[in-house]
Image (cartoon, rainbow, N blue to C red; front, side, top):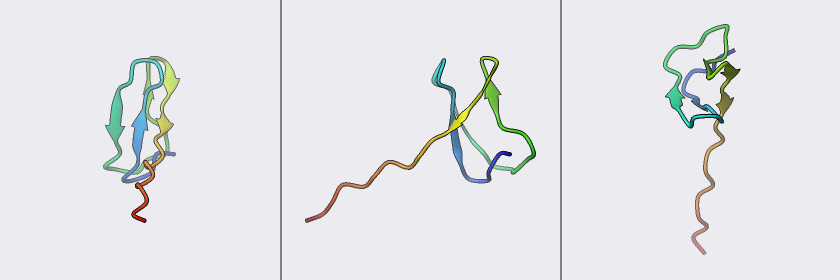
Length: 46
């Protein structure tokens, strides 16, 4: 299931998509399902 507001990335070609509408399927590219990108950690401000 695709999740609204999540960014998906193709591990084969590097294509990225931003989900603007939730749906029952996961985005696919290059014949494989795309993986959800995790948010990058913010640098600490010590």
